Length: 452
Image 1 (spheres, rainbow, N blue to C red):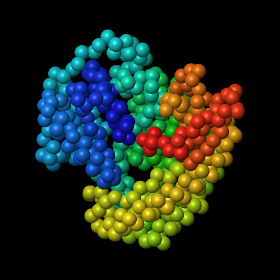
Image 2: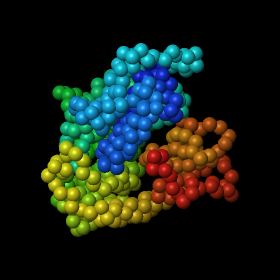
Image 3: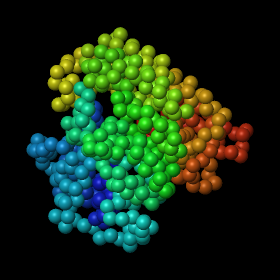
Protein backbone atom coordinates (compact mmCIF):
# COMPACT_ATOMS: atom_id res chain seq x y z
CA UNK A 1 0.00 0.00 0.00
CA UNK A 2 2.83 2.41 0.80
CA UNK A 3 4.41 1.68 -2.57
CA UNK A 4 1.12 2.55 -4.27
CA UNK A 5 0.82 5.74 -2.19
CA UNK A 6 4.37 6.78 -3.14
CA UNK A 7 3.62 6.16 -6.79
CA UNK A 8 0.48 8.28 -6.60
CA UNK A 9 2.39 11.12 -4.94
CA UNK A 10 5.19 10.92 -7.53
CA UNK A 11 2.57 11.14 -10.27
CA UNK A 12 1.09 14.31 -8.75
CA UNK A 13 4.54 15.89 -8.34
CA UNK A 14 5.40 15.15 -11.96
CA UNK A 15 2.26 17.02 -12.96
CA UNK A 16 3.94 20.06 -11.39
CA UNK A 17 7.02 19.45 -13.51
CA UNK A 18 9.21 17.93 -10.81
CA UNK A 19 11.45 14.97 -11.61
CA UNK A 20 12.57 12.23 -9.26
CA UNK A 21 16.19 12.03 -8.17
CA UNK A 22 17.87 9.32 -6.12
CA UNK A 23 20.15 11.90 -4.47
CA UNK A 24 18.56 13.69 -1.50
CA UNK A 25 21.26 16.37 -1.51
CA UNK A 26 20.18 17.51 -4.96
CA UNK A 27 16.43 17.24 -4.36
CA UNK A 28 14.15 20.24 -3.90
CA UNK A 29 11.47 18.09 -2.28
CA UNK A 30 12.03 15.05 -0.05
CA UNK A 31 9.16 12.87 1.20
CA UNK A 32 9.59 10.12 3.78
CA UNK A 33 6.76 7.59 3.48
CA UNK A 34 6.49 5.62 6.71
CA UNK A 35 5.22 2.29 8.02
CA UNK A 36 4.56 1.61 11.69
CA UNK A 37 3.08 -1.90 11.54
CA UNK A 38 6.04 -3.04 13.65
CA UNK A 39 8.29 -1.17 16.04
CA UNK A 40 11.39 -1.81 13.91
CA UNK A 41 9.80 0.01 10.97
CA UNK A 42 8.85 2.97 13.17
CA UNK A 43 12.37 3.11 14.61
CA UNK A 44 13.82 3.29 11.08
CA UNK A 45 11.48 6.17 10.28
CA UNK A 46 12.67 8.13 13.31
CA UNK A 47 16.28 7.44 12.38
CA UNK A 48 15.72 8.74 8.87
CA UNK A 49 13.99 11.83 10.24
CA UNK A 50 17.14 12.58 12.24
CA UNK A 51 19.15 12.51 9.02
CA UNK A 52 16.64 14.75 7.28
CA UNK A 53 16.81 17.25 10.14
CA UNK A 54 20.54 17.71 9.57
CA UNK A 55 19.98 18.03 5.82
CA UNK A 56 17.28 20.66 6.38
CA UNK A 57 19.62 22.65 8.64
CA UNK A 58 22.25 22.67 5.89
CA UNK A 59 19.70 23.41 3.13
CA UNK A 60 16.73 25.28 4.65
CA UNK A 61 15.08 25.80 1.25
CA UNK A 62 14.46 22.08 0.82
CA UNK A 63 10.87 20.99 1.35
CA UNK A 64 10.55 18.05 3.73
CA UNK A 65 7.36 15.97 3.76
CA UNK A 66 6.38 13.21 6.17
CA UNK A 67 3.80 10.75 4.87
CA UNK A 68 2.07 7.53 5.77
CA UNK A 69 1.12 5.64 8.89
CA UNK A 70 3.42 7.60 11.21
CA UNK A 71 1.25 10.61 10.40
CA UNK A 72 -2.02 8.69 10.36
CA UNK A 73 -5.44 10.17 9.80
CA UNK A 74 -5.64 12.16 13.02
CA UNK A 75 -4.32 15.62 13.97
CA UNK A 76 -0.52 15.57 13.45
CA UNK A 77 0.05 18.33 16.05
CA UNK A 78 2.26 16.13 18.28
CA UNK A 79 4.43 15.34 15.26
CA UNK A 80 4.58 19.01 14.28
CA UNK A 81 5.87 19.83 17.73
CA UNK A 82 8.39 16.99 17.71
CA UNK A 83 9.64 17.58 14.16
CA UNK A 84 9.29 21.33 13.46
CA UNK A 85 11.67 21.08 10.48
CA UNK A 86 9.08 19.04 8.55
CA UNK A 87 7.15 21.32 6.23
CA UNK A 88 4.19 19.10 5.30
CA UNK A 89 2.46 16.16 6.98
CA UNK A 90 0.57 13.85 4.63
CA UNK A 91 -1.90 11.21 5.85
CA UNK A 92 -1.74 7.81 4.13
CA UNK A 93 -2.86 7.89 0.48
CA UNK A 94 -3.28 11.69 0.52
CA UNK A 95 -0.85 13.62 -1.74
CA UNK A 96 -2.99 16.79 -1.68
CA UNK A 97 -1.31 18.53 1.33
CA UNK A 98 2.09 18.53 -0.36
CA UNK A 99 0.71 19.52 -3.76
CA UNK A 100 -1.13 22.46 -2.17
CA UNK A 101 1.95 23.47 -0.17
CA UNK A 102 4.14 23.54 -3.28
CA UNK A 103 1.52 25.44 -5.28
CA UNK A 104 1.20 28.05 -2.51
CA UNK A 105 4.96 28.53 -2.49
CA UNK A 106 5.08 28.80 -6.28
CA UNK A 107 7.40 25.80 -6.60
CA UNK A 108 6.39 24.58 -10.02
CA UNK A 109 9.40 23.49 -12.04
CA UNK A 110 9.28 24.23 -15.74
CA UNK A 111 8.47 21.10 -17.72
CA UNK A 112 11.39 20.36 -20.01
CA UNK A 113 11.12 19.31 -23.65
CA UNK A 114 12.21 15.81 -22.69
CA UNK A 115 9.28 15.49 -20.32
CA UNK A 116 6.93 16.84 -22.99
CA UNK A 117 8.10 14.10 -25.33
CA UNK A 118 7.54 11.51 -22.60
CA UNK A 119 4.01 12.73 -22.05
CA UNK A 120 3.37 12.79 -25.81
CA UNK A 121 3.78 9.02 -25.70
CA UNK A 122 0.85 8.88 -23.30
CA UNK A 123 -1.81 10.65 -25.35
CA UNK A 124 -4.40 8.08 -24.29
CA UNK A 125 -4.27 9.35 -20.72
CA UNK A 126 -6.88 11.70 -19.34
CA UNK A 127 -7.00 14.23 -16.54
CA UNK A 128 -7.03 12.35 -13.25
CA UNK A 129 -5.17 9.33 -14.59
CA UNK A 130 -2.24 8.03 -12.60
CA UNK A 131 0.84 9.03 -14.60
CA UNK A 132 3.86 6.88 -13.90
CA UNK A 133 6.98 8.76 -12.81
CA UNK A 134 9.40 9.25 -15.70
CA UNK A 135 11.93 6.83 -14.22
CA UNK A 136 9.29 4.06 -14.20
CA UNK A 137 7.87 4.66 -17.68
CA UNK A 138 8.69 1.61 -19.78
CA UNK A 139 10.33 -0.05 -16.76
CA UNK A 140 7.40 -0.89 -14.50
CA UNK A 141 5.79 -4.20 -15.41
CA UNK A 142 3.72 -4.83 -12.27
CA UNK A 143 1.87 -2.14 -10.30
CA UNK A 144 -0.26 -1.96 -7.16
CA UNK A 145 -3.75 -0.45 -7.27
CA UNK A 146 -5.49 0.28 -3.94
CA UNK A 147 -9.20 -0.55 -4.11
CA UNK A 148 -10.17 -0.19 -0.44
CA UNK A 149 -8.44 2.08 2.05
CA UNK A 150 -8.32 1.66 5.81
CA UNK A 151 -9.81 -1.16 7.86
CA UNK A 152 -12.73 -1.52 10.27
CA UNK A 153 -12.00 -5.05 11.50
CA UNK A 154 -9.67 -4.05 14.37
CA UNK A 155 -7.65 -7.15 15.23
CA UNK A 156 -6.25 -6.63 18.71
CA UNK A 157 -2.61 -6.48 17.51
CA UNK A 158 -3.12 -4.21 14.48
CA UNK A 159 -2.48 -0.47 14.30
CA UNK A 160 -3.84 -0.03 10.77
CA UNK A 161 -7.41 1.04 11.69
CA UNK A 162 -5.99 3.74 13.99
CA UNK A 163 -3.45 4.99 11.44
CA UNK A 164 -5.30 4.54 8.13
CA UNK A 165 -8.87 5.06 9.28
CA UNK A 166 -12.07 3.17 8.61
CA UNK A 167 -12.75 1.06 5.56
CA UNK A 168 -13.38 3.11 2.38
CA UNK A 169 -13.91 1.49 -1.02
CA UNK A 170 -13.01 3.30 -4.23
CA UNK A 171 -15.55 3.34 -7.05
CA UNK A 172 -15.31 0.79 -9.84
CA UNK A 173 -14.95 3.60 -12.37
CA UNK A 174 -12.04 5.19 -10.55
CA UNK A 175 -10.24 1.87 -10.19
CA UNK A 176 -10.74 0.88 -13.82
CA UNK A 177 -9.58 4.31 -14.99
CA UNK A 178 -6.35 3.84 -13.02
CA UNK A 179 -5.83 0.33 -14.39
CA UNK A 180 -6.40 1.57 -17.95
CA UNK A 181 -3.90 4.39 -17.45
CA UNK A 182 -1.32 1.91 -16.17
CA UNK A 183 -1.91 -0.38 -19.13
CA UNK A 184 -1.48 2.55 -21.52
CA UNK A 185 1.94 3.15 -19.95
CA UNK A 186 3.18 -0.41 -20.39
CA UNK A 187 2.13 -2.08 -17.13
CA UNK A 188 1.18 -5.72 -17.70
CA UNK A 189 0.15 -6.84 -14.21
CA UNK A 190 -1.90 -5.16 -11.49
CA UNK A 191 -2.35 -6.21 -7.87
CA UNK A 192 -5.57 -4.94 -6.27
CA UNK A 193 -4.89 -3.92 -2.69
CA UNK A 194 -6.81 -3.70 0.53
CA UNK A 195 -6.08 -4.36 4.17
CA UNK A 196 -8.95 -6.83 3.85
CA UNK A 197 -9.32 -6.83 0.10
CA UNK A 198 -12.26 -9.28 0.16
CA UNK A 199 -14.33 -6.63 1.92
CA UNK A 200 -14.24 -4.39 -1.14
CA UNK A 201 -17.66 -2.77 -1.56
CA UNK A 202 -18.97 -3.88 1.85
CA UNK A 203 -19.04 -0.27 3.07
CA UNK A 204 -21.36 0.75 0.22
CA UNK A 205 -25.06 -0.11 0.29
CA UNK A 206 -25.72 -2.55 -2.57
CA UNK A 207 -22.09 -1.99 -3.60
CA UNK A 208 -20.08 -4.23 -5.91
CA UNK A 209 -17.99 -7.05 -4.47
CA UNK A 210 -14.45 -8.09 -5.30
CA UNK A 211 -15.56 -10.85 -7.66
CA UNK A 212 -17.54 -8.34 -9.73
CA UNK A 213 -14.60 -5.93 -9.77
CA UNK A 214 -12.25 -8.68 -10.95
CA UNK A 215 -14.57 -9.39 -13.88
CA UNK A 216 -14.55 -5.72 -14.90
CA UNK A 217 -10.77 -5.28 -14.57
CA UNK A 218 -10.32 -8.51 -16.51
CA UNK A 219 -11.67 -6.73 -19.60
CA UNK A 220 -9.03 -3.96 -19.59
CA UNK A 221 -6.92 -4.32 -22.73
CA UNK A 222 -3.17 -4.56 -22.19
CA UNK A 223 -3.37 -6.05 -18.72
CA UNK A 224 -2.16 -9.64 -18.82
CA UNK A 225 -2.29 -10.60 -15.14
CA UNK A 226 -4.37 -9.65 -12.09
CA UNK A 227 -3.69 -10.44 -8.42
CA UNK A 228 -5.28 -9.26 -5.18
CA UNK A 229 -4.27 -9.12 -1.53
CA UNK A 230 -4.63 -9.38 1.39
CA UNK A 231 -7.61 -11.64 2.08
CA UNK A 232 -9.26 -12.58 5.38
CA UNK A 233 -10.60 -16.09 6.05
CA UNK A 234 -14.01 -14.75 7.06
CA UNK A 235 -14.61 -12.92 3.80
CA UNK A 236 -13.29 -15.34 1.16
CA UNK A 237 -16.50 -16.44 -0.53
CA UNK A 238 -17.08 -19.23 -3.02
CA UNK A 239 -18.16 -16.54 -5.49
CA UNK A 240 -14.71 -14.95 -5.24
CA UNK A 241 -12.94 -18.29 -5.57
CA UNK A 242 -15.04 -19.13 -8.64
CA UNK A 243 -14.04 -15.81 -10.22
CA UNK A 244 -10.37 -16.66 -9.70
CA UNK A 245 -10.89 -20.10 -11.23
CA UNK A 246 -12.88 -18.81 -14.22
CA UNK A 247 -10.97 -15.67 -15.24
CA UNK A 248 -7.76 -16.47 -17.17
CA UNK A 249 -6.05 -13.19 -16.27
CA UNK A 250 -6.57 -13.69 -12.51
CA UNK A 251 -3.65 -15.60 -11.07
CA UNK A 252 -3.91 -18.80 -9.04
CA UNK A 253 -2.37 -17.06 -6.04
CA UNK A 254 -4.26 -16.48 -2.79
CA UNK A 255 -2.81 -14.64 0.18
CA UNK A 256 -4.93 -15.38 3.26
CA UNK A 257 -3.30 -14.88 6.67
CA UNK A 258 -4.01 -17.33 9.47
CA UNK A 259 -1.82 -15.47 12.03
CA UNK A 260 -1.88 -18.38 14.54
CA UNK A 261 -2.85 -22.03 14.80
CA UNK A 262 -4.20 -21.95 18.34
CA UNK A 263 -7.90 -21.24 18.83
CA UNK A 264 -7.11 -19.50 22.12
CA UNK A 265 -4.57 -17.20 20.45
CA UNK A 266 -6.93 -16.53 17.55
CA UNK A 267 -9.56 -15.50 20.09
CA UNK A 268 -7.04 -13.19 21.76
CA UNK A 269 -6.36 -11.69 18.34
CA UNK A 270 -10.11 -11.33 17.62
CA UNK A 271 -9.68 -12.98 14.25
CA UNK A 272 -13.14 -14.57 14.18
CA UNK A 273 -12.32 -18.10 13.00
CA UNK A 274 -10.76 -21.30 14.33
CA UNK A 275 -7.93 -23.62 13.34
CA UNK A 276 -10.50 -26.00 11.86
CA UNK A 277 -12.17 -23.15 9.93
CA UNK A 278 -8.86 -22.22 8.32
CA UNK A 279 -8.09 -25.81 7.40
CA UNK A 280 -11.51 -26.12 5.73
CA UNK A 281 -10.88 -22.86 3.85
CA UNK A 282 -7.56 -24.11 2.48
CA UNK A 283 -9.27 -27.33 1.37
CA UNK A 284 -12.02 -25.29 -0.32
CA UNK A 285 -9.51 -23.05 -2.11
CA UNK A 286 -7.55 -26.01 -3.40
CA UNK A 287 -10.72 -27.79 -4.47
CA UNK A 288 -12.02 -24.83 -6.49
CA UNK A 289 -8.74 -23.47 -7.95
CA UNK A 290 -6.45 -26.05 -9.58
CA UNK A 291 -2.70 -25.47 -9.13
CA UNK A 292 -3.30 -22.68 -6.63
CA UNK A 293 -0.52 -21.28 -4.44
CA UNK A 294 -1.59 -20.19 -0.96
CA UNK A 295 0.39 -17.68 1.10
CA UNK A 296 -0.19 -16.84 4.74
CA UNK A 297 0.96 -14.55 7.54
CA UNK A 298 2.00 -15.70 11.02
CA UNK A 299 2.62 -13.75 14.23
CA UNK A 300 4.65 -15.50 16.91
CA UNK A 301 4.80 -14.45 20.55
CA UNK A 302 1.35 -12.93 20.91
CA UNK A 303 0.72 -12.02 24.57
CA UNK A 304 -0.11 -15.16 26.51
CA UNK A 305 0.96 -17.56 23.76
CA UNK A 306 2.32 -20.70 25.42
CA UNK A 307 4.78 -23.09 23.84
CA UNK A 308 1.96 -25.61 23.38
CA UNK A 309 -0.15 -23.03 21.60
CA UNK A 310 2.78 -22.08 19.37
CA UNK A 311 3.22 -25.74 18.44
CA UNK A 312 -0.38 -25.73 17.17
CA UNK A 313 0.76 -23.09 14.66
CA UNK A 314 3.80 -25.22 13.79
CA UNK A 315 1.60 -28.28 13.21
CA UNK A 316 -0.85 -26.26 11.09
CA UNK A 317 1.92 -25.14 8.74
CA UNK A 318 3.44 -28.60 8.70
CA UNK A 319 0.11 -30.15 7.74
CA UNK A 320 -1.10 -27.60 5.18
CA UNK A 321 2.21 -27.15 3.32
CA UNK A 322 1.53 -23.61 2.11
CA UNK A 323 3.62 -21.98 -0.60
CA UNK A 324 4.83 -19.04 1.49
CA UNK A 325 4.53 -17.84 5.07
CA UNK A 326 5.36 -14.27 6.07
CA UNK A 327 6.42 -14.67 9.70
CA UNK A 328 6.83 -11.84 12.20
CA UNK A 329 7.40 -11.51 15.92
CA UNK A 330 4.64 -9.80 17.87
CA UNK A 331 5.41 -6.14 18.45
CA UNK A 332 3.14 -4.05 20.72
CA UNK A 333 1.82 -1.06 18.81
CA UNK A 334 0.36 2.06 20.44
CA UNK A 335 -3.42 2.43 20.59
CA UNK A 336 -4.04 -1.27 19.90
CA UNK A 337 -6.07 -3.44 22.28
CA UNK A 338 -3.13 -5.77 22.84
CA UNK A 339 -0.84 -2.89 23.80
CA UNK A 340 -3.37 -1.33 26.18
CA UNK A 341 -4.72 -4.44 27.86
CA UNK A 342 -2.20 -7.28 27.49
CA UNK A 343 1.27 -7.92 28.86
CA UNK A 344 3.96 -8.58 26.26
CA UNK A 345 4.99 -11.63 28.26
CA UNK A 346 6.83 -13.71 25.65
CA UNK A 347 10.53 -12.88 25.76
CA UNK A 348 12.37 -11.59 22.70
CA UNK A 349 14.59 -14.67 22.76
CA UNK A 350 11.59 -16.99 22.76
CA UNK A 351 9.96 -15.05 19.91
CA UNK A 352 13.16 -15.40 17.86
CA UNK A 353 13.31 -19.14 18.61
CA UNK A 354 9.74 -19.65 17.47
CA UNK A 355 10.23 -17.55 14.36
CA UNK A 356 13.35 -19.55 13.44
CA UNK A 357 11.50 -22.82 13.92
CA UNK A 358 8.80 -21.73 11.49
CA UNK A 359 11.36 -20.34 9.04
CA UNK A 360 13.22 -23.67 9.04
CA UNK A 361 9.99 -25.62 8.61
CA UNK A 362 8.78 -23.40 5.79
CA UNK A 363 12.11 -23.64 3.99
CA UNK A 364 11.78 -27.43 3.95
CA UNK A 365 8.13 -27.27 2.87
CA UNK A 366 8.71 -24.81 0.03
CA UNK A 367 11.81 -26.68 -1.17
CA UNK A 368 9.63 -29.76 -1.46
CA UNK A 369 6.86 -27.88 -3.29
CA UNK A 370 9.21 -26.17 -5.74
CA UNK A 371 11.07 -29.41 -6.49
CA UNK A 372 7.90 -30.61 -8.23
CA UNK A 373 8.48 -27.98 -10.95
CA UNK A 374 11.84 -29.42 -11.96
CA UNK A 375 11.78 -30.26 -15.68
CA UNK A 376 8.41 -28.56 -16.20
CA UNK A 377 7.70 -25.67 -18.55
CA UNK A 378 6.14 -22.69 -16.76
CA UNK A 379 4.91 -19.31 -17.93
CA UNK A 380 6.53 -16.30 -16.30
CA UNK A 381 5.98 -12.56 -16.68
CA UNK A 382 9.44 -11.01 -16.93
CA UNK A 383 9.79 -8.05 -14.56
CA UNK A 384 13.40 -6.89 -14.71
CA UNK A 385 17.06 -7.59 -15.26
CA UNK A 386 18.58 -8.70 -11.95
CA UNK A 387 22.34 -9.24 -11.63
CA UNK A 388 22.68 -10.17 -15.27
CA UNK A 389 19.69 -12.50 -15.29
CA UNK A 390 16.08 -11.94 -16.24
CA UNK A 391 13.69 -12.35 -13.35
CA UNK A 392 9.99 -12.99 -13.46
CA UNK A 393 7.18 -14.77 -11.66
CA UNK A 394 4.94 -17.69 -12.44
CA UNK A 395 1.16 -17.47 -12.21
CA UNK A 396 1.56 -18.78 -8.65
CA UNK A 397 3.94 -15.88 -7.85
CA UNK A 398 7.07 -18.05 -7.72
CA UNK A 399 10.29 -16.26 -8.56
CA UNK A 400 12.17 -17.57 -11.62
CA UNK A 401 15.49 -16.47 -13.16
CA UNK A 402 16.80 -17.24 -16.63
CA UNK A 403 19.74 -16.08 -18.72
CA UNK A 404 19.53 -14.66 -22.24
CA UNK A 405 21.30 -11.65 -23.73
CA UNK A 406 19.65 -11.75 -27.15
CA UNK A 407 16.93 -9.21 -26.39
CA UNK A 408 15.07 -7.23 -23.75
CA UNK A 409 12.46 -9.58 -22.24
CA UNK A 410 10.96 -7.04 -19.84
CA UNK A 411 7.15 -7.20 -19.82
CA UNK A 412 7.00 -10.38 -21.90
CA UNK A 413 5.18 -13.61 -21.06
CA UNK A 414 7.77 -16.33 -21.54
CA UNK A 415 7.68 -20.13 -21.21
CA UNK A 416 10.83 -21.48 -19.56
CA UNK A 417 11.93 -24.95 -18.53
CA UNK A 418 12.77 -25.22 -14.83
CA UNK A 419 16.28 -26.69 -14.43
CA UNK A 420 16.96 -25.92 -10.76
CA UNK A 421 14.77 -25.26 -7.72
CA UNK A 422 15.35 -23.85 -4.25
CA UNK A 423 13.07 -22.67 -1.46
CA UNK A 424 12.98 -19.03 -2.51
CA UNK A 425 13.52 -19.09 -6.27
CA UNK A 426 13.95 -21.29 -9.31
CA UNK A 427 16.19 -21.23 -12.39
CA UNK A 428 14.79 -21.62 -15.87
CA UNK A 429 16.02 -22.06 -19.40
CA UNK A 430 14.52 -20.79 -22.63
CA UNK A 431 13.36 -23.41 -25.14
CA UNK A 432 16.24 -24.24 -27.44
CA UNK A 433 18.93 -23.07 -25.01
CA UNK A 434 22.00 -25.30 -24.83
CA UNK A 435 21.02 -28.14 -22.50
CA UNK A 436 24.56 -29.12 -21.64
CA UNK A 437 25.16 -25.81 -19.88
CA UNK A 438 23.35 -25.19 -16.62
CA UNK A 439 22.57 -21.57 -15.83
CA UNK A 440 24.66 -20.01 -13.09
CA UNK A 441 22.72 -19.87 -9.84
CA UNK A 442 21.97 -16.97 -7.58
CA UNK A 443 24.51 -17.50 -4.80
CA UNK A 444 23.09 -19.83 -2.15
CA UNK A 445 19.60 -19.09 -3.49
CA UNK A 446 19.61 -15.91 -1.42
CA UNK A 447 17.51 -13.09 -2.80
CA UNK A 448 17.24 -9.71 -1.04
CA UNK A 449 13.96 -9.58 0.88
CA UNK A 450 13.09 -6.34 -0.87
CA UNK A 451 13.10 -8.28 -4.16
CA UNK A 452 10.68 -11.02 -3.11
